[in-house]
Image (cartoon, rainbow over all chains, first blue to last red; front, side, top):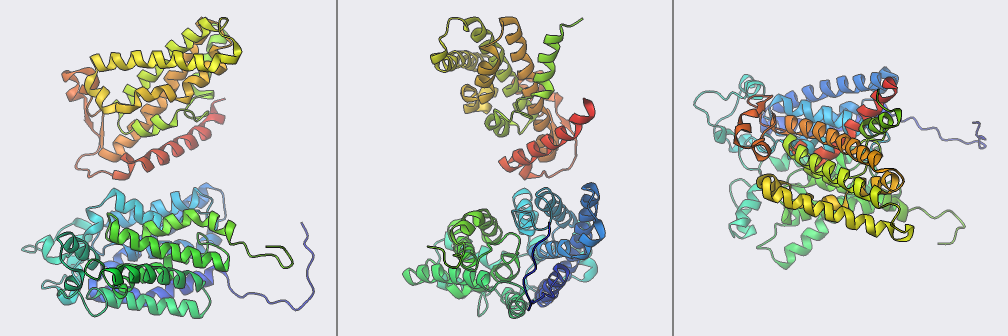
Length: 343
Length: 213
């Protein structure tokens, strides 16, 4: 089919999918380094294993679908999916966790729905939810941030833990792991401790959890760079963070003994990673400008609801999947009006 | 030599018009109960028995029932049959009856049953209708068993666990540990696992079908 070409001037876009995905991977670097600093080198193992599995799975399923393999691999989208999944996982999760998660994300969530551009759900988060629901024990063993820990694992010891589930002798599993700040908050609130007192505890820093807050700030820095380069739509992170802050502020002002401050929620758990890197996936997010604001705000509110009243300590993955599900409805009601059309 | 009409009924029921794979009917109990082989077998056999009885009765009544009120009559017949089967299970397979719970009375609402009553039994003779009920029921049971086995192996790493619910105490030793020292993929046991498993099975069926015929 031949389309009529409009008269000049034209503004060609220099952006390719590979270019965007490469920039996203680069923007993840500060966050990954911060994670490695506080939680050890396990994150690199997860990244490498996940990346290799995702690329292999992508190549295999493209060959099965009789599609060109090399161009699709060059667009780096499989690597981004694997990287987002890998940085969400506990750094000492057994090696098969990240392998299974990447396989599920690429094969079931991405390619069974039609491949890049057709998938309904964010592959990385669907992979994460698959792992969280299937292997709750392995998915909740978070290392103690380095500054709080009395025992620190060397590279070889981390390796041994990931591949053989072997800890060095005389070290207990509980000595190297700790409840995450969100988890601590949830447990202590369950014991009827006031929230402001819990947040004074030794595990908490000046923004959120010790260690965790720096990781969040590093992701924020990478995300702001992506936003400045217009690689991600600003409406989604802004919508999500303001949605979260709004509901958190209302609850905090109504009862500060029951609810943690909005600052804590901004820098705890996966908020920053979710807002700038995960919710902004262009395939599964809403498409119009207003729709993206609504989409982001919906995620922010859902994250808060799941964190405070839900069964899990953090809810980024569930919130993103639920919002993915509402994208068709959001797009339907936020269609921009064609010029001259009646509202 | 088998009558070609009968052969067609059997083939349709087991494969070409399989109620779970092709018609996608009766999915609610199929998805809810198929988490182990034994649960699948229990529900599959109960559904098959219901299909045979209701098809037979409806085929016998088909000239007596006025077309305007045929659906309520079918529902009444099916409800009677299911109630009888429920009481039978309550009497002889009490533990399995408790495990399957609400899904036994819910066989009444299984669309596959009223579907066969309307599409086949109300237009065909008793012998053919009985055979159709049996073939459709066995086809449905087959899908339940495959899905149940898939979910049980992935989810628990076992096969035929809790066989004593159906076959008495001697069946306790039937359990096969397919994967030893296996912590289990919980998702396969949960409802999403049922949907994913059935989707993959339908894909496999569609891939195999053209090669067979």
